[in-house]
Length: 493
Image 1 (cartoon, helix red, strand yellow):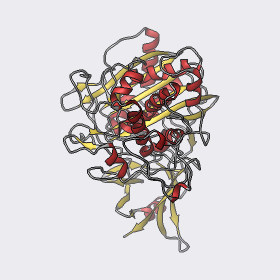
Image 2: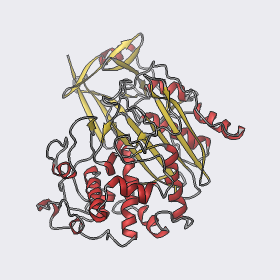
Image 3: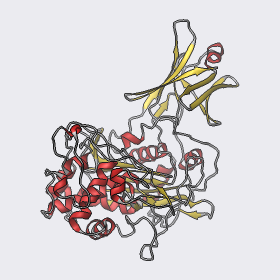
Image 4: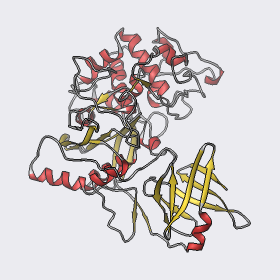
């Protein structure tokens, strides 16, 4: 799931819980004094989405891991087309006190789509697949059932990789270990034991961007139907192994050949996912097991291929195609293109049950970063990445919102006290001394006002909150605006 999407999750899902004591003793390799100094600066310079005037606005990795109840974090930083450093922090499994190392594998979530696109484009490069042809020309084990919503237009593989096919099914929840898994056709047709609906047209292809893990799963089927190989076998032979991602795999359960330690997945409360992690038969969309070091190799090879200095998997021409937005200015083939300051980056984020991850790679200069963690909360990713960008002087990458806080009179604050509800979600506002606090599921967060009605919460990135006052000067609701998304909860007794 791309970073723009995962950071837009509403505050109902963002449960940030302070107080957990997490060990973040760094593991493994020690670097030169200069690099160790940079690592120390990154660890102690985490940057939030907002800076408050008059405060230092500095946070340590240990503080933020404890705050978010993030058991483990793994980071790799790229400089000048090389891995500058990689390090693990905290616990891969807190029950057994198994530490995160640079070898620890995490589920990459939707970052899987980036590697999937490399594999699909390898078939294009070999002349086995035309990006502009109808997908049903290549599908054998299953055919896409066109209907009137596609308006007679063909869906192409380029549409699938760029999320412009107009298809349904945003993402997949995965399956608990040990339960009956659906076949690929059952997933695509929404037939039990599949736990998602059928992948079908929502509107005509090529019209606009709409994120669809369902479309990526169709591309997985194309790979298997063209090659006659299992998806994990094809991706190992043609993508992971050639890129040097030797610890990575699309195989869902450990095998004797793949004994690299896998992190345990945790929800935001620090509660482990049942069975330690979910299984994703939708491998291309969400099934990659990897670590930041291996993903950094993928980023570097992409950067070098773009410069015409490497063709381990894709040629310079095909890499340029992969990094070119297809319909809009953001969504390319398996990656998203973002301009930050004076630089352009290719990036992707990922969210699986109990795992989140994010990478950025610059199109020029050979810089990048990968962060993976076994928690459900994405906010810590941006804070770490902002720190890396600041320490490594990525011009204009970190652009925080600067806010000045406002002192609201107690009589006004008291009018905001109460419960606010939308469907089955209820949040509360209560006084703690002379401060108003936000409470959800028994967990409190502090509010920072910018005027009498508008406020922000540090733990909810880019959230603009407002209390809504009606014509009778009574508080009727609280509103959250994030970009173009507006959510309103009505005040109840």
